Image (cartoon, rainbow, N blue to C red):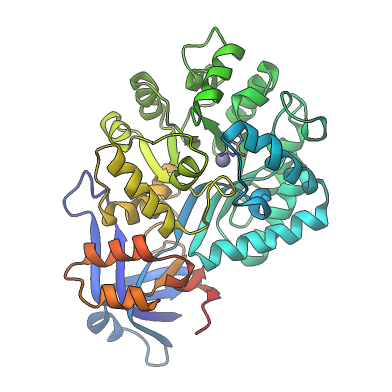
Length: 428
Ligand code: GUN
Ligand code: ZN
């Protein structure tokens, strides 16, 4: 057993829809036993119940929250983050496909997976929904690296069998994905995600096989891209003229269900938003990527009005930061440009419990209810000179969280714990 003294913040509900959505304990104690949360409460009350020899780590002045959950990013794109191109399709051709080609090499894949996961942990992200490359070896590498760190990690090999270079093309035979499911899904803390890249790079035969696999393994994840870029949307219209919309291509093949995560969702219509809500699918909003690639501005109010679940993704390497704080920063500005307002409390909800709910993982992560897996981070509101200056005169929790989101990045993550073990500590 081990305990951590700090301010505690976690959520019970979405602050956009519930009045008492969060718990804030100024002088709190998080008690962890065997990798799980035993209790979270007032230091004065809880410390009196601890056996006297229980070690208490003193993080006073810091804020402990559940670890961040990044619901959309690509591990093979780590080395090509910040590659310039005029929009999504040329960016894929020029940088993405050649970079992903290297992941047929298991050693390169494993070395990159190790760096990638350590970078997530440096940024306070303890769970992610990850695209690998088309190579089976890339998914093996991710899960091996994740197992070595005992992380709650979801990912899967990309599927694409047309409109891509030969060296990245697979087929409608999904045997490799099924083997990966059997080898890794629910093994340790790993979870498998069936990953058709996006409709333009799958034949109808592959999409149909993907839907069948998703039905055969109903608790796996499904992840793909939808309605990110206007050129892409036009292309999908040409490839699938019989479908009502881009999203409808996925629905037609049985790919909308709980644990389906759709990246971007910028150019959807009201029917699409309603279908996301009705099927229990979820949205990964990726603001740094959408701004960087010039894809467009996601409208969170439309998703909220439809009752569709929203979470946040970095979309590295289309995204420009591994930091969920910087992702909040950009999400805030995108919301402003769409005439909405995203309070910091809501953004912290979206990056923790909201994402866990979008992934149907709230039984395991995203909060500090007793029994939750002890994935948590220690945020330092005085991590930089500017943050210290700004947060020294914040009057409310909202102001402090807002400053962390707008000014913070990996420097604000003092420590990261996964299943109760210290997996990252920022050096002074
Ligand atoms: N659409 C299809 N593939 C990709 C990708 O790798 N990144 C992004 N942002 N969009 C995509
Ligand atoms: Zn993506």
